[in-house]
Amino acid sequence: MRASVKGAAGAAFLAAAAVVYAPLIAAILGTGFHLNGRAAFRGVASPLAVSAASALVSAVVALLLGTTFAVLVERARPGLRGGCWTLGLLVLMVPPYIAAESWIVLLGPVGKISKAAAIMLGFGPATADPVQLARFTVPGYVYTWAGVGVVMGGCLFPIVALAVASTLRRTDHRIFEAARLAQGARGVCRIAAHLLTPPALGGALLVFAATLTEFAVPQVLRVRTLGEAVYARIQDGELATAAALVLPLLPLVVAAAALGAYLLLRARVASLAGLEGEVPRFSPRAGGRITDLGAGLVSLVAATPALLLSVAALVWLAVTAGSAHASALGRYKVLRAAGLVDSLSGAWQLAHGDAVRTVLLAAVAATLACGFAVLLARLTSRAGWGVLPWILGAGLAVPAPIVGLGLITLWDNHWGAPVYRSAAIILLAWLARFLPLTILLVQGALARVPVELEHAAALAGKGAWGRFTSVILPNAAPGLAAAWLATYVFSATEFSATLLIAPPGCSMLAPSVVNLMRRGQDPEIAACQFLLLCVVALPLAALAVAGLVRARALAIKREAA
Image 1 (cartoon, rainbow, N blue to C red):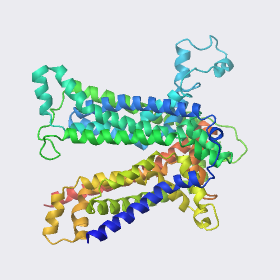
Image 2: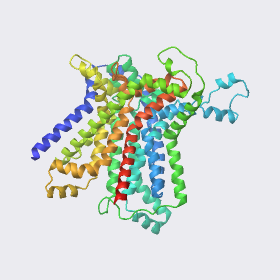
Image 3: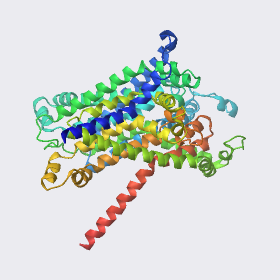
Image 4: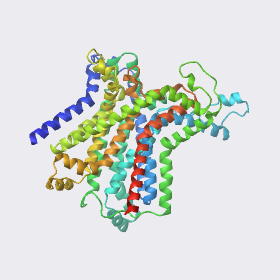
C-alpha cells in the first residue's frame, strides 16, 4: 500500500513538473540555443538593471505599507479589523496594469490631479490661453522605473501584510507584556522587531521576485525592463536570443523567492516556539479610539496606490465621458460615441466574446488546478513527501513571455496543431504560470486541518474517501475557496503569456483591455476597465449571494426553532 501511494505521488509530481517546467525547457533547448554569448546578451545590462531597480522599489514600498498595515490593523477592534482587511485584500483583486493606467490618468504628465494641482500652485503657464494650458505637462515619475516599483508595491503589499499578521496571530503576546514590564516601550519594540523582521523581509522578497517577472505594468508605463526586451526579441523572430536573455533573470528570481520562503518558514517556527499548538492562549488587548483611527488611516493610505486611485480614475473617466466624441474610422468606431453608456455598449459588442471566454476558461483553469493540487497534496502527505511540492514553486520565477515562447516551441508543429490552434494552449499557459501558487495555497489549507480529526474518523470506520469528504473538505473549504479565487483572478487577468499564444478567433479580455488602454479614448478606457473588473468580481458576487442565502436560511431556521 505504501509503495503504491509513493508511486502515485511520484507520478502526480512529475505531471505537475511537466506542466510547469516544460515551457522553460522548451524555450531554452528548443529554440536553437547555440548562439555566441556576447551576441545573445548584447544590451541586456540596462534592461536587467531597470528590472532590478523597479523590483527593489516595489519591495521597499510593499514592506513599508504591509508592515505598518498589519501591525496597526491587528490591534484594532474586531469590527474595524475585518473591514480594514477586506479593503486590503481587495487590492489583490485589481490587476496591476489597471492600477498603472489609473496613475497615468490621475498623476501622469497630463493627469487629472497632477496637472490641475500644478496649475493651482502656480507652476503652470501664466496665461488663460486654453491652447497653452492644454500643452502644459507636469514633469513626474509615472513613466519611470520608480513608477513601476511604486505601482507594483502598492498592488502587492498585502503579501507582506498577510505574512506579518500571520506571525502576530501565532505569537503568544505574554512576551510583549513581559518586555514592557522589563524595559518599557523600548523592550516591546525590540521584541516586535525580532519577531516581525523575518516575515516582513520574506514577504518583501516575494514581492521583489514577482516584480522582476512583471511585463504588463512596464509596458503600460513605457519602461524598458528585461521582460520588455524579451518580448521585443520574440516579436522580431529572434527566439533563441529571447530565451538567452531570460537566463540572467532566473537565478535572481529563484534566489529571492527561495530566501523569502525560507524566512517565512523560519518566522512560522519561531512564533510557535513554546506554545501548546498553533493558537496562542493569550491574545493582545484591542486598542482604543486612537488605535482604531490609526488603523483606518493606514488602511486608506495603503489601499490608495492600487485600489482607491483605480476607483477614482474609473469614476473620473465615467463622469467626464458625458461629452460627445467625434466619430472615428477603424475597428473601434463603435466605442467613440457619446458618453459612458454608449462606450459600455460598444465595449460589450466588441469584447463580449472575449469576456465570456475569459470567465469560462479561467473557471476551468482554477477548477483543474485546485483539483490536481488537492490530489498532489494528499498523495505527497501520505507518502511522507510533504516538502516535495515546494520544488514547483520555482516555476513562479519563469517570466511570462518565456512561458509563451516555450509553448509556441512545443506545440507549433504538425502533431500539436489541435492544441496550438485552440483554447487549450491558453489553458496550458495559465496552468504553467499559476499551478505552483495553487498547490502552495491548497497545501496550506489542508495542513490547517488537525490530523486528530482524520484519525478519529478512521477509528470510526471511515475510508480514505469518506475521511476526505466528511472531515478534510469541510474544514479546509475556506482555504480551498481562496485558492480557487486566487487562481481564477490571476488567470482571468493574465496578459503577458496570453498575448503571445492566444490563437486567432480565441482572444482573451486582458490583452484586449490593455491594447485599448494604450491607444483608446477616455470613455472606452473606462468601459473596458469596468468590463474587466466585472469579470474579476464575478465569483465574489456569486459567493456573496450564496452567503446571504445561507444566512437567510439560518435565520429562518432559528425562528422556526
